[in-house]
Length: 306
Image 1 (cartoon, rainbow, N blue to C red):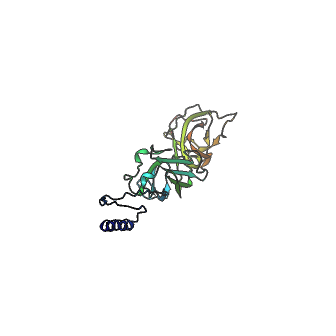
Image 2 (image 1 turned 120 degrees about the horizontal axis):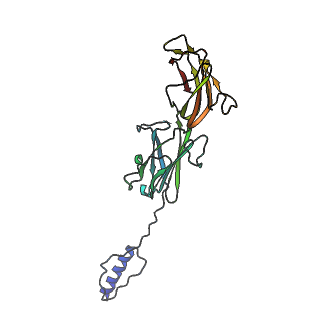
Image 3 (image 1 turned 30 degrees about the horizontal axis):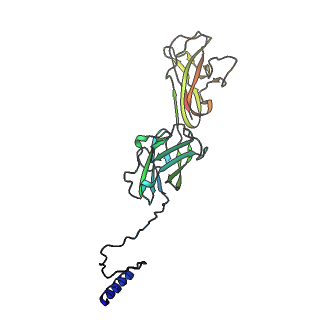
């Protein structure tokens, strides 16, 4: 019995050293415990807020840039971190807008562009180039870089724009803002490089051409003329004042649209504060002097956009 009691006391001492709250009693025929004691542990992993570490603007050659040309591809690199790993990030959004717009406005070629990535549908957005976009290749690390590639329309407003980038997980989000400049742009062309008119001396002959334009700043279209000199007999000429330009097909009354413009050797504004893109039909009128020699005449009508 003393031996049994001594054995029981030693087992109780070991149990207390293990920090167990239950009392272990061994009978006279018990054997020592050989298996460990399972203690359940419940771990709660808290959500870590995602972060936008950096935002980089890149030009069409993937070089760092602070200005963007309308009509040219550019990229936005967004580096994010989530301590629950990059796989916890569900959405990255980049919104670019002009000074005439706001972050929540509707997308438009002139003032507002929204680019998106989501873990369910990938890349999408206004004027996005999906083939040039990319998401992180390793989702097990805390950091990753998303690249958005897009092209601003040629009518994208010139001036300072704002870029807001937002990263989201299932519960929280973070944003970063930067500014960049959209460069001024203007394209201007005529449907013909030569002018053919025919008529009798003392009458007004006419011809037409079409102006195509695209711009992101207000422009004016100007015109001036040189003297047209006869190629066979140079004493017969057409002076700049013999030419008129209008935006309706009649040189007489009633006048519709803009007033008819009588040309001179100096630039005059034909159309002022033209914006966006489009086409305009123009009509050229020539007062044929009397007398007048039937021959080819060489000179220039100069149209420009400023």
